Image (cartoon, rainbow, N blue to C red):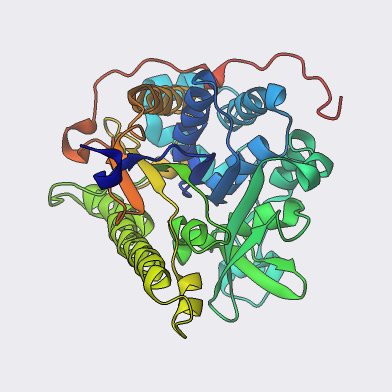
Length: 397
């Protein structure tokens, strides 16, 4: 076909964006996705995260490229250490005991139970104390593993979602717009009633995932838009069979809640961006025939950018239940890390963005997710997440 009549073209991305949901221990999958991205020769230009996605994002954006993977490994090794001596009991009684210990004693470097909290007895407490657990340990971990001075100037943009408790409005704290501090990351992961609200600028914030755990809208509504590769690993399976047992009911309820209508949001944003492309094409045609038309200024509502969205989905592991988001056992962390690395590596090797795109399309979805019903595998390869970290060098070096 002559070039003058060609209606499709290859639109190569000019930036790479990671979109990370919240999901506690499931976030090890995101770390594996990042490792695959690095192995493909790419680094992200922007990370948009909520809750554990915000923490992973801060570890990436808040360190130079050569230290990012090491910081992620150190964080997830710390998360999977567990209570001393627990591995022997876990071998005898299974993951239930470890998860019970997590609820009882907390997670090293993350959270710890409050001593005699009045909140637990439905008595009033200050907003910063109205929770079952304290996250002072996480604040220290972030200060140790994230270079916030570097983050302020980082070439990787970081956006973290939180919800304003008093107004019920979703807010994104964005390194492009303000200097991010540990409090912003803590706010994005302040899941009630386990964790307390975080005060920032006189307002109180909770985990953004309770409002929306899918952040694609923040990316597609940002200005200026550019041709982008968006890697979107969802942590909560969309598909499943009807549950029969109580444990399955509780697990499925949580999956539906935190999946945050990911497929629906993708389709809504796809349709919205299709309209932007239509306006862009119509404005160009109008300008050729009537440059003085009063409708020409409406062209600013159009857009010609193309977003290639690689959709991944963390697998459902055998025997996981409604407590899977606190499954910080080394084996589980390693399995999820390895799955993220394998899935993202397979998707990136396929280079799905190297396809011809019609001029009317602005969001191309490349679905590399797996059906959740058949995703559970009896054995997954161990990832490197639980290996003890090597001696660290300073990130400002």
